[in-house]
Image 1: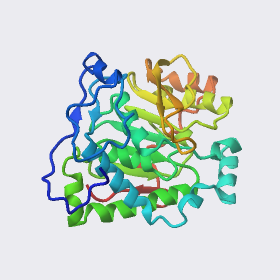
Image 2: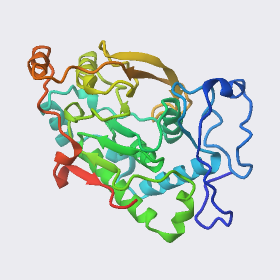
Image 3: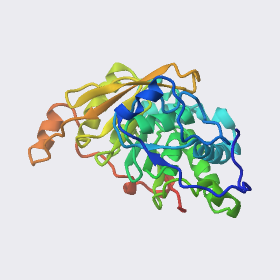
Amino acid sequence: GGRISGSSSRAPLCDARMTEDAGARRGEEEGEEDEEEDDEFEPLSRRLYKGAAMVPGALRLKPRWQQAVAGIVDEAYRELIGGRARLSTTEADDRAFAEEGLPQQATQYGEILLEGVLDMLWRVGARPGDRLYDLGSGAGRASMVAWLLGLRSTGAELARSRFEAACEGVDALESLLTSASFAPRVAGLPARVPSGLDFVRCNALQLDVSDADVVLLSSVAFTPALMEQFGVALRSLRPGARVVSFKPVPGPGFQMLGHFKAPSSWNNTWSAEWCVQVAISRPDVSSGAAAAAEADGRPPDIRRSCASFSASDRRVIATT
């Protein structure tokens, strides 16, 4: 086992494969080993990809490419100045949350760990080319993992200290991906979307996510009132879009698909339970929609696309 290095003499294989249907995977639920696992590499976790996916057809990485993704992300964040201290909010960050009318609890940090992100993307049917938004993205690891798996990925974070940490992670990732010794590490992964990873500093409630296929909402410490606000903001999602959240998003436009457990920054034992919902309706976008939105508290005109942010509040990866 162990992380693979750029000097591996074994020719990289395009091993990232699509899942089979749920019925074909009942054997795994009973604890059977995946016959396609590489003997040379250990999976990041024996709990990864067990059971049945909620949405079939998603990307599922073999152990050597799980290790490849983990190695890339680890190295991208290894030199991050300040380490975990950068994930704590500053006084300026706290003021920014207060000025946006967000509760102090929303500043608390929590994230799904890397192996949990891989498992989550498989369970919700994420495929290369899909659009993912990570709302409350922190240092940006989940967004980076999604991009390395071929998704177009955006992380939104209001705390400037965390946003800047994510930007530094992108700086390091760009250097890694342009290194000749790193090419074998990504050869077996899906094609990456050019300029398809970005981070924006904003109130996530104000970001236009209407083109999302998957939304990750880090709602661990969100208040009921804030969850109600997200329930309104996410009504712009197109039918079929999946929302992954620690707490369920309220509102009539969402249907529960199920729950899964994943390792997290506060408990790495695969005991934290997350829910998956699917958008089943989209509000009317006719001329009368603005008045209706205003009547029920939804601000229709402040949604911002990623491209609308200035360079100081947006970082886009420059390499593929």
